[in-house]
Image (cartoon, rainbow, N blue to C red; front, side):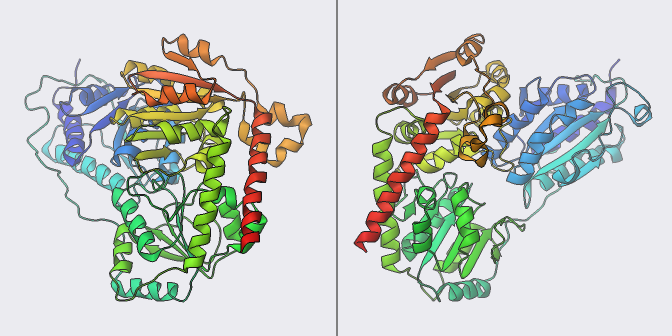
Length: 577
């Protein structure tokens, strides 16, 4: 038995997503989702990706959506399949990534009465979705076909508009579940979205911008701080503002300001290493800070902001929300970054930062960069892995970075260069789950991607290698194998030796080589910086895994030594003042 004309109800919904701009759908196998899965796969203009693990599939979709900055659909069957989407939905909520979750469900008469594979899917993701809608049972009447298109258009618009995020549409299906793919004019005659909407980022008027500039003009020592930036216009505007104001820019590794063709001497990349020292924090207190983008990765910066609150703290966010965890007294500016900077630079008033202040930041940054390059030049360490990527990755490449130590080493050792290397990460919820899948998602958009990840994160998402193999994707994975949770060595738990290894170090002795080769994936063991450099210079032609083996205790001591060297630079500079 097949659905016959009820098929139009779903084919029109799917085509309406395409008319709104959707390009990708990620499907996990199941029976109740048969109508959606078959029709998505049949649509002539949509890329359909398959993976059996809903958790991994959701992070894969997130990686595509994060890279393209447009909604991706997810399709799963009823029951716990939908629950496995939850971690990626939480990540998407906090990182403002648009996803459209299409959960198949049992019809109403089979709910809450012991029927198999039937759980409560109504608003199951709570406040982590922007919008929830329970679809009606499929009908082929004209009003219901219009309803279906309208809901699809609405789903796309809500997901993709202000504060991009997740929507869930729950589809109850009765038997039969197989759609009729032979129907005439299966996708309808629409050539544009059923619902049209106009909107954009928040803006402020020129008078408000003038007030902000006047407040800034009362101070000589300022900083621009940049968290994650996602648009080219934001990057170029921040660099232009820094150049005009001659002001230091503390550039997070996700800001895209470090390795960009137009990056310049005002970009300060070593601030995390510098702010670990009390003397530096005391002597270089800014009078004002303007932050663009989310809160930076750097914990020392966060602690410094709490303990040394500036006179004026401005956070510019392109969407209304509250992304300021320090509790510092803050002037929230809801505007797109580039529009706000254009307003500042087109004002009749002008501003230039104190030259001595800026010069000192630049001089200490240059000395610290030279130190970090020298320290990472010889022995293969976790930090030198990042330094090697920084120096040898080709132009127009993407680095996807895992949480915990990899992102923090990127913040320290990924130094500026005039080439365009994009850095991406899942920093909404900062989890270690789904990182490999998200990197595959970025690679699925056509970007050439190298993933930097720790061994525990790799184990957590190991089965996503099958996703990459099945879909013919290309990804280079650099696994730093320190046999456990390396970041905990830098936390107070490290002093509690009785419980540390069992509860925090968590050594699992992963056989990375055997695991990788069992899937016929290329494996390399890099034992020197030179070997690693030779490998990462090459184009990414398939899936390959490069393992770098390190020791957690030695890595901790090595980082402590670096802190001592940076302290000496700071002390030397104090002596010259």
